[in-house]
Length: 284
Image (cartoon, rainbow, N blue to C red; front, side, top):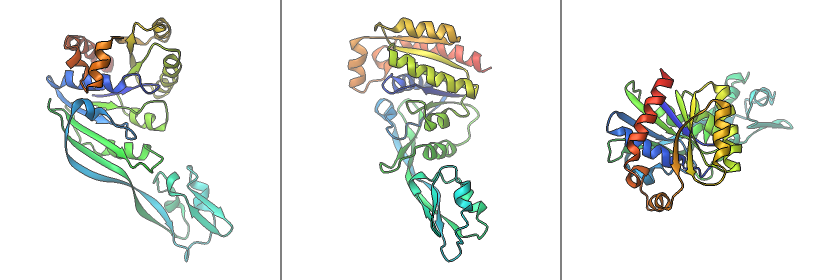
């Protein structure tokens, strides 16, 4: 089963929920945690894995062989990411825009394009103390696009038919989020009871409707003014509220010390198990 934990915006407690769910499930099943927030991964702060395996991540970018190139412009036409441009009788390549799809190479009538590797980050894996198998990607700071790295991270996972995979998504509703959610059986949406939280929840819900992925909502910081807006929206959209995390100082202090939610409130474990029972039924 593949479960993604996402949010329409940053700072809602998405990783807090993902880490607690990982710890809560690890005692009863094979659990893999995949941190897809490659621009700012922080799942390790809560799960504290020993990362023992590392690999470079790279994409193949075009290199124009000028002695063969006739500047016909076919490569420019087929590149949907605008990573190539024809200037006069010369083809220019912009590596920062390239997704490594290979369309330019396949469509060059002169065979004038070579593909060369361009490192974009690293992939890491190891185990957390609870036996959780932990995977993450880390995008090189100078690289502008996280999506190719997320795609490689997902392909890097060994095949497993008997594990629950938790994908900690990047925040927001961008291409990197869509790539993370692709292939998920269920999505847990973490939101906060603010007008911004509601606005961005609407965005991510519309994406999930297009992708036809079932979802439920966890409201974090319940007790703040505005939670009734989230509740009303979920009722209108037929979204089940899976859990409500209270707005309290104890939780904030614990998270600031690097504790996960079940260390702060061990009694939440029974609630998480009930929530998982609902998710499993939704996925059947």
